[in-house]
Length: 399
Ligand SMILES: Cc1cc2nc3c(=O)[nH]c(=O)nc-3n(C[C@H](O)[C@H](O)[C@H](O)COP(=O)(O)O)c2cc1C
Ligand SMILES: [Fe+2]
Ligand SMILES: [Fe+2]
View 1: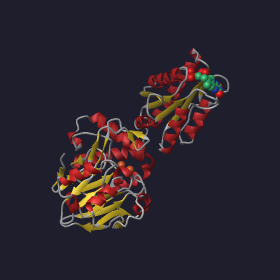
View 2: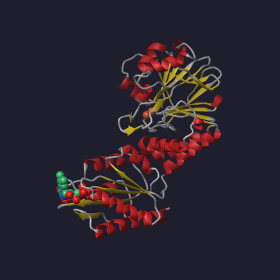
View 3: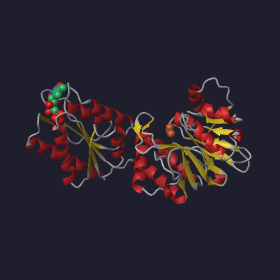
View 4: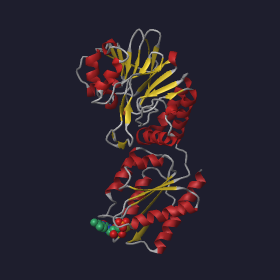
């Protein structure tokens, strides 16, 4: 086990969780994740963030490669979510810091998770600076990116931004830097996965925060999950990706998700897809049984249209489609075209209910829901195909 020096006297001392799959209980992390933490050696030695519960000893062992943990003077808690603060009690007990810095709003989450500790907690706000010897730490609150308490720490002398959850990805690897990671497609997917499942509801705040970040002279962005962005080019690249994802401009691709009991709605899904394809819009069809709701959400990053299908089941939609719609609504996607379809036997409420759900996400719904009774006939499939084609045309008109 080693601590990696990422800049002179600045070390990555985090943990790689190769086997992690259930990220925070709502998203998957198909290839694991990391909990990054950083140590700066200076007149005052500083630890930035800690790690998930159960990883405290690994963090301490890695820190011990740099210095005796008791030599830590300050701990900066950029964010109190437990993947970064869940081992705080263990680390505080071992390091006995002189001060623990949190944002103003972090005081509340600190009190919520660690009440009555008597720890030397110091609240900071945007623009506050502390000198640690040859370096300065400048704090910048990033409220609701993605918790009220979230903040980032900037070290101007090293042109380094310790960015907490912002700019992170769930990647578990031996390499620490984006430029060392040889799988560009996987990296792209993991950036989107993280943003679309965690940051998306705060897209407007991202667009306000990015110019603040761009004003800083940054050569390295060190997030608390996944790989570090090293060099001006990498920094510009991740900022540009964030801008694109937050702007949510229409993308020429359609996401079709569905559930089915006896495959009728599934046939409809493929017919809708063929309509999109005929109009020149690529598709991704995803069964909610075979794809986790977070994977479907990740796919939405590339899709300007969303079409959802469910058979009618006991006068409503199947539960996994309902779950997908609920999850998607909470993440507040913007600027999408939507459509709904489903097979039924007698009352046939499902397609209409999906239509309403997508409308409640402020999607443009240019086509009435398409329903078919029992198994779709040739004519029903033609109507589905036409629906796909019309939605594709509406999407192309927006591009
Ligand atoms: C347990 C069960 C409950 C159902 N409830 C309804 C219902 O409330 N209203 C309705 O119109 N059809 C209902 N159906 C009929 C299905 O919607 C119909 O079989 C449909 O074609 C199934 O589509 P699928 O092949 O995509 O599963 C129900 C079917 C099952 C098996
Ligand atoms: Fe978080
Ligand atoms: Fe996190």
